[in-house]
Image (cartoon, rainbow, N blue to C red; front, side, top):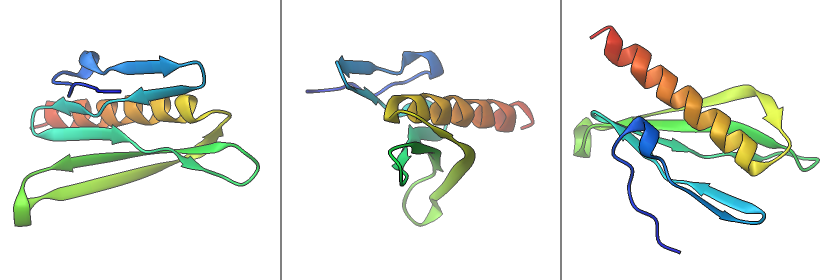
Length: 95
């Protein structure tokens, strides 16, 4: 399965296969936002998102984890990606 990189907040790609949905990372300006849900004990999922910027030794990667847990990998991924997009939009609005 091949996915194309997203270039705008609303261009993320969702590939569905009955039980699996993969969200491509989203690029907004200098930020690359990627959902990275983590399985929890009991079969639920924790939402976390990586927000990276820069290159080489000047690169940074902020990882945010959220308190809520989710019943599916997809639900956690969608929540994390939307929170990451909101964070980047807020951060770039103040610059």
